[in-house]
Image (cartoon, rainbow, N blue to C red):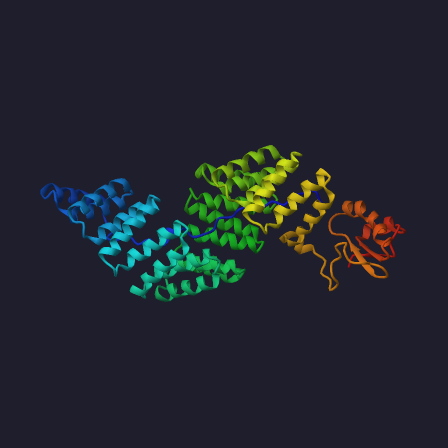
Length: 462
């Protein structure tokens, strides 16, 4: 049994949900516009429309707090102007004050029930608040009011994707693209859903279309890199991440994903540098801290790995992968009880998490809890890595319960030569149950294991 433990890196590829936020009345020259609105207000201090437009200019200049104050002034003078409430909501939205934004959108809709843009942006706020069903309903209402609304169709698709409904998501992205064929964001989001379905060629084609439409689209290059990485085209994936970073040098997610590709290419030092850069750009980036911990484990630095996982958990305490990876690092420090507790936490978050059960089994075996340890070790067959090497036979797997008298059983190696040498001595215990034991081993061990007690027939793999 290989003593290495399973670790999982986190990858961020999702198109930001604010891509479909509709901003009304953008100013072509916001600085000049602001000067003129201020002049108008000086002449007419109760000029509600000027305060509203002033808020729009301030929002375009990313002076969001000042924009909200200007919208509030407009509302004080004219409380029945739906567009002002809507625009106020977009400024709050950009400040990530989603509940306050939602209240503003709701007020706009009360004043103007056919306000499709407000329903769309209301949906994005609900999406950010993880109220997915309510978001769907809001997007549906936006589309009912305005059937040719590509942003609402695309945003609806993104919620459906988060609800693990990629086929329905693709249908809505296709609707958005039918309305607006040059809608780069919809093409990229469509690629994400295709990647969920493991249709990687189609996903890459969708990202390529997005990039052709919008050559400076950093997110599409990042998402394309993720698909190429799944294809095991690591050099191409890294090149795609490089393009994303060249376009957007402060793109923390692209650095973290680039680190994942380098890690898979067995370059943990380079991966670590990318995770560190991601964290420098985004200090509250839990996934990058978790991925950094994995790289430190590969570099045989378990203390540093645990510290990195702890930082990730402090930022985002709901990641089963991080708790499982932390358990793996604690195993390397021989802190077995702490490792088991960390794996148990991972399992409480994600009850079907095979890697966490497997890491827990390692700790139990090292503690001498052989029976429970080997019972949980069966979870290895549900991990992606083990499934690649699983022996596929028509005959059922023997787990020790069925009688073996006068039956033939195949014992085959699963991992390395050392594990095979260590465990082949148990062939006699199986033979003692009345079975004819056929032992399948790698060619280099054939000579060594000739005449092994309990073996009826020794065969070479293949």
